[in-house]
Length: 350
Image 1 (cartoon, rainbow, N blue to C red):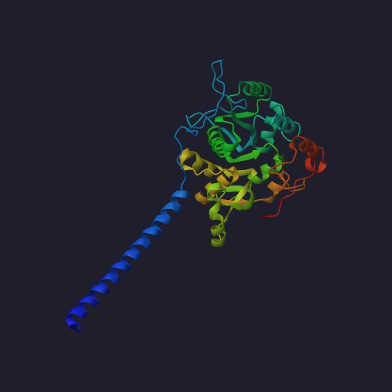
Image 2: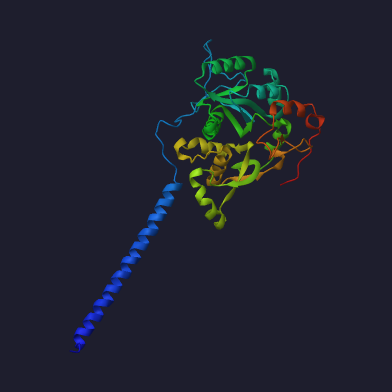
């Protein structure tokens, strides 16, 4: 029996409804799938909140209280404080030379070269350049190492001690601790992070920092483009990032760079757990500076391979992240008149 028109049209309408329902379900599943992928992707990129007691929660400077009943003095007339209303020592630039418990030889070589080994010599250098210099180091549970450090401090009095564990794998935390402590102790126009395995010309660094700048928020260093995704967990994303043209961003080489006071004050105001920490310290700082939208000032004189009339910091780039065999190389460079006695010439603008 032939189907009646009524029956035929009803069936056709039913099939159309089913197709629409199927299409709607497929679209919904697709949207949910894409949303799930994006959620998972964002979750991977978000900072991981570890156990609240696994990371340093506060950064402060450690010093010995003056038993004579006076104030806490750092030996250079600067009263130590941490935002408690005490006077900060005024300098144009504060240079924190990052060092560790295994770098006794490097510090010995530095004190025999561009960094004076005596208290009066450091004072004269500060007066001549407007720069204060201190070795920056954390603490350790090794009583023997701490005992040796105390002896070195008593002899030279050129350290800034941080209340943070000295551990190579946590250099980004130490760097943040340094900037916070330096800002608390010194009223400075620039805060310089330097490593203990570079040869430095303090006079030229002083001239560089003293230049007039239109930007109050300045990130100064020898700039390079480095990978964004240094975390091993994110290595899978690098090919895609490369295709998107977002694999690299500009940041300073780690051996030496400087942040202006306005930049450091912003770092100090933020809580420690507000920062995304990468495994590499220079990448970490570069990421923060990118997020803060500061002015990047590139100066290649901060990463010279040889001593020249314009070099400010000399180290074996790119072979080593500093001087290769620094204990011997520092002494060798200091004996070269091209390092110590060449007149200072203004470098060409980058």
